[in-house]
Amino acid sequence: MKTKLLYTFLLFLGIFIIYSFKVNNNPPQKPFIVVLDAGHGGKDPGNKGNGYVEKDIVLDVVLQVGALLEKEPGFKVIYTRKTDVFIELYERGPIANRADADVFVSIHCNSHHTQANGAETFVMGVDKSGKNLETAKKENEVIFLEDNYEEKYAGFNPNSPESLIGLSLMQEEYLDQSIMLAGLIQNNFVNKLNRKDRSVKSGPFWVLHSSYMPSVLIELGFLTHNTEGSYVNSKKGRKEMAQEIANGIITYRKNIALATNDAQNPVITQEEITEAINTTEEKIYEGVTFKVQLAASSKKIDPKPYNFKGLEEVSRNKEDGLYKYYYGETSDYNKIQLMKTFAQEKGYPSSFIVAFKDGKKEKLSKILKKEDQ
Picture 1: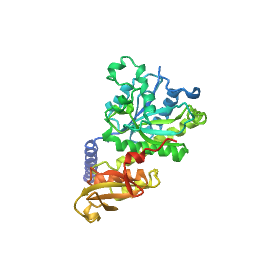
Picture 2: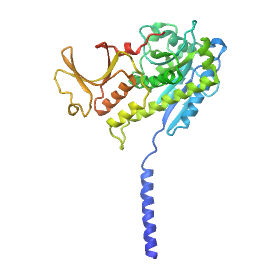
Picture 3: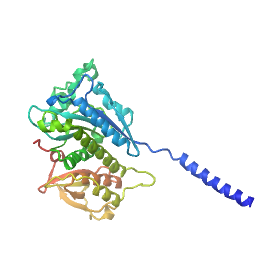
Picture 4: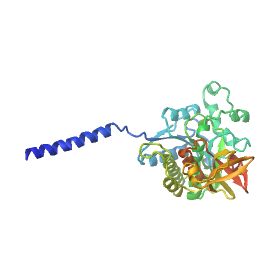
C-alpha cells in the first residue's frame, strides 16, 4: 500500500515538475499595445465650433475606447494624456515608440467655415492634390503654442504646403497596415453608425510622421456642423463612436494575428483567411476590381495552385510584353488587404495590391482617394 502511494506521489510530482518546466520556459506573450492620443489639451483647446470644445470631447472618447480595450484579453492601453494637460506634438509619437506599441491612434474633431460634415480617417502620406492639406495644417498648428518650436521642428512651418509635403514618409513601411486599421474604423462609422463617409485619406500629420508603427488619425466629425456637432458632443455620440473605434482595433488585431508566424501556427491556412474575410466589415468600391500582383515574368506559367505555393484564384494576364500573375479578384478593399497578407505569408513578400476600373489598371492611390462631398 505504501509502495503504491509512493508511486502515485512520484507520478504526480513528475507531472507537476514537467508542467512547471513548460510554463517557465514559455515566456509570456507580449500584449497587444495600443497608444491612444487625445488631440490638443491644456492651453490648446482645439476647435470650438458651435461652442463645443474639441479637447474635452476627444479626451472623453479616448478614455472610453481605452476602457473597452482594457476589458479585452491580451490588450494593453497607454494614453498620451488622461487629463486636461498640454502635450507637445513632437512628444506624442515617441510615447508610442518607447512603448514598442502595435498601433497608434490619434483622435480629433474637425471644423470648417461651411456646413461640411462627415467622419474621416487619415494615414500618414503626401496628398499631392492639396485637398487634405488644410486639415493637416489645422492639426499641425499646435506647434506654434510650444516653446522654442523653431528648434524642435527644425524650421518646419505648418502653414507652408512645401514644408508639409516635405515631411519624410517614415510611415511608409507601415502604410498597408495603417490603411487596414483606418478602413476598419471608418467602415464601422459608416456601416454601424450611418455617418457620412469622407473616406480614408492620406495627409502630412506630424503626430503620425513621428511614430514607428501602424498609425491613424481619426476626425470624429465637424463641430461646426449644426447637427453633427451636437451628435459628436453628446454622451450618446461619444459612446457610440468609442465603441466602433474599439471594435475596429479589435478586428485589426485579429486580422494581424493571422500573419503571426509562431510555432503552433507557422502558416496561415486558406480556412483562416476565409474566416477572417467573412468576419470583416466590407469596404466596397463600386466598379473597381482589386487584385494582388504576385509576380511579373516573360515566362508563361500555368496559374495552377501547385505553381504558386498552393494559392488558389491565381490569374494570368499579358501586359506590356510581360505576363502578370494576380491572386484574388474583388471589389472589397478589406478582403484584398487580407489576401495580400495571405500571399506574403505564403512566400510572396513583395506582392502588392493593384486596382482595375472598367478593365484598365488605375493607380491604387487614385482609387482610394474619394472626392469630398
